Image (cartoon, rainbow, N blue to C red; front, side):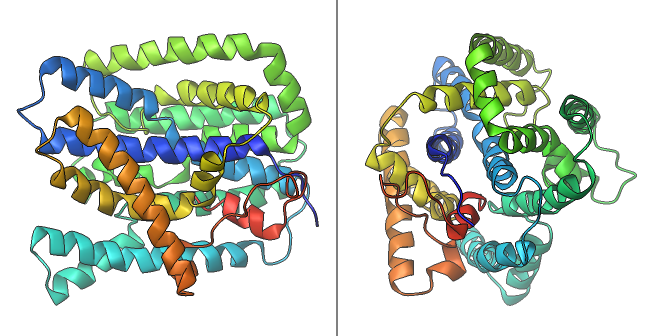
Length: 370
């Protein structure tokens, strides 16, 4: 079955990938330059970081948009198995790699500690690839939506998903840990990121946008000014919540990120639809995005420390560029050694005029990886 390629998704995936790397570069700068950065510098970096937090949720949108566009009314054979084979195996492999890396880095590497860390990484998604488990939940939810929710009004379903998402994030954002619950501190600090209700609004919007992609484009053209305004206003709300300490945590699982993220995605989708050519560098980052996503944190942490004698304003861009470049290079080498699929999944298909209007099943699998 042939499917039309969506050039805007290449831009979106590249943008989302770059923002994730940039956020980790900023986080490492906060760690390595603690007590050195001036207050204005800290504030400036925090503002930039908050502006980039749309990156992670954008991957949910991309994944479900492409699934809904490719399979609007049916689920193909081996739908889940193909994604287990190409996504969960790298997830498990890299869980071992990150367990070895983190324990070696901290000097706590023992056999017992390694086994415990590997189990935590795999079962509790306690490492950077946690988002793969989030995405897998939406593969199942896509099947449910396709089979049972076809006749429900999109407006009603999006509204209900928004309410569920708001309640879920609102609870963990504003209610302190309930220590009567075992492991409450870990649940509130990290694990609440994993269950699908924390991302449900992005999924529902992407489902109906992908399923009705022609109408979606027309909708954007008609209301783009409002989404530009919405992105600005919602970001000001995020800033006010952050610097008033109402929501001090700077991550993408904030309740005030929902409207901002969708607005930014819509604006980016509209603007990139007006660009006729995709630069090779955008295509390159997009094709290697899964490898970058899985590998970059190792390089960000090490390059940031190597360059900590430099100004943070030099350290950040240098770490950013090198981390992306080395991640791409290592992904390329792993594939040349025929083991790339087991560590960093597949590399995306190169975009060209020959592939402009056609994408095959392998492309769809790559689109939904992150």
